[in-house]
Amino acid sequence: MIEVTEEERQRAIMRSRRMFQTDQSSNLQTVARRSKKEGKEEERRNNIKLMHNQLDLSVEVIAKAFGLPQQEVKDILGQS
Image 1 (cartoon, rainbow, N blue to C red):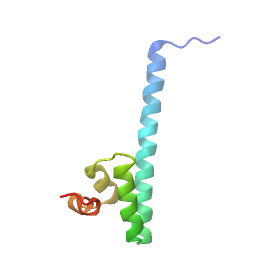
Image 2: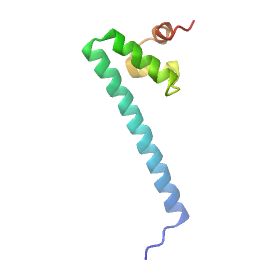
Image 3: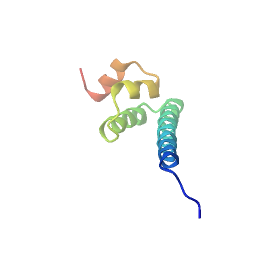
Image 4: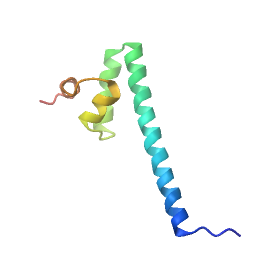
Protein backbone atom coordinates (compact mmCIF):
# COMPACT_ATOMS: atom_id res chain seq x y z
CA MET A 1 0.00 0.00 0.00
CA ILE A 2 1.37 3.39 -1.00
CA GLU A 3 0.85 6.34 1.27
CA VAL A 4 0.48 9.79 -0.23
CA THR A 5 1.62 12.74 1.83
CA GLU A 6 -0.42 15.92 2.04
CA GLU A 7 2.36 17.75 0.18
CA GLU A 8 2.21 15.25 -2.69
CA ARG A 9 -1.56 15.56 -2.79
CA GLN A 10 -1.32 19.36 -2.96
CA ARG A 11 1.27 19.14 -5.74
CA ALA A 12 -1.04 16.85 -7.71
CA ILE A 13 -3.92 19.30 -7.27
CA MET A 14 -1.77 22.21 -8.46
CA ARG A 15 -0.55 20.17 -11.46
CA SER A 16 -4.14 19.35 -12.33
CA ARG A 17 -5.15 23.01 -12.12
CA ARG A 18 -2.24 24.06 -14.34
CA MET A 19 -3.17 21.41 -16.88
CA PHE A 20 -6.78 22.62 -16.86
CA GLN A 21 -5.71 26.23 -17.37
CA THR A 22 -3.34 25.24 -20.17
CA ASP A 23 -6.07 23.22 -21.88
CA GLN A 24 -8.51 26.11 -21.54
CA SER A 25 -6.01 28.54 -23.02
CA SER A 26 -5.21 26.17 -25.86
CA ASN A 27 -8.91 25.69 -26.62
CA LEU A 28 -9.46 29.45 -26.71
CA GLN A 29 -6.57 29.92 -29.10
CA THR A 30 -7.82 27.09 -31.30
CA VAL A 31 -11.29 28.62 -31.52
CA ALA A 32 -9.79 32.02 -32.26
CA ARG A 33 -7.47 30.65 -34.96
CA ARG A 34 -10.23 28.60 -36.56
CA SER A 35 -12.57 31.58 -36.69
CA LYS A 36 -9.88 33.85 -38.08
CA LYS A 37 -8.64 31.29 -40.59
CA GLU A 38 -12.08 30.48 -41.95
CA GLY A 39 -12.79 34.17 -42.24
CA LYS A 40 -16.28 33.77 -40.92
CA GLU A 41 -16.97 37.09 -39.29
CA GLU A 42 -20.33 35.99 -37.91
CA GLU A 43 -18.84 32.86 -36.35
CA ARG A 44 -16.06 34.93 -34.80
CA ARG A 45 -18.57 37.40 -33.39
CA ASN A 46 -20.65 34.56 -31.95
CA ASN A 47 -17.56 32.96 -30.39
CA ILE A 48 -16.58 36.28 -28.81
CA LYS A 49 -20.06 36.68 -27.34
CA LEU A 50 -20.06 33.09 -26.09
CA MET A 51 -16.68 33.50 -24.41
CA HIS A 52 -17.85 36.65 -22.69
CA ASN A 53 -21.39 35.65 -21.72
CA GLN A 54 -21.10 31.96 -20.96
CA LEU A 55 -17.46 31.58 -19.96
CA ASP A 56 -17.34 34.96 -18.22
CA LEU A 57 -14.01 35.86 -19.80
CA SER A 58 -12.85 39.46 -19.73
CA VAL A 59 -12.59 41.67 -22.79
CA GLU A 60 -8.81 41.70 -22.33
CA VAL A 61 -8.52 37.89 -22.41
CA ILE A 62 -10.83 37.60 -25.42
CA ALA A 63 -8.93 40.32 -27.28
CA LYS A 64 -5.64 38.49 -26.68
CA ALA A 65 -7.12 35.15 -27.78
CA PHE A 66 -8.40 36.62 -31.06
CA GLY A 67 -5.52 39.03 -31.59
CA LEU A 68 -7.91 41.99 -31.70
CA PRO A 69 -7.83 45.40 -30.10
CA GLN A 70 -9.91 45.55 -26.92
CA GLN A 71 -12.10 48.26 -28.43
CA GLU A 72 -13.10 45.97 -31.30
CA VAL A 73 -14.15 43.27 -28.83
CA LYS A 74 -16.13 45.87 -26.87
CA ASP A 75 -17.83 46.98 -30.09
CA ILE A 76 -18.81 43.39 -30.87
CA LEU A 77 -20.18 42.97 -27.35
CA GLY A 78 -22.05 46.26 -27.59
CA GLN A 79 -20.05 47.87 -24.79
CA SER A 80 -18.81 51.44 -24.74
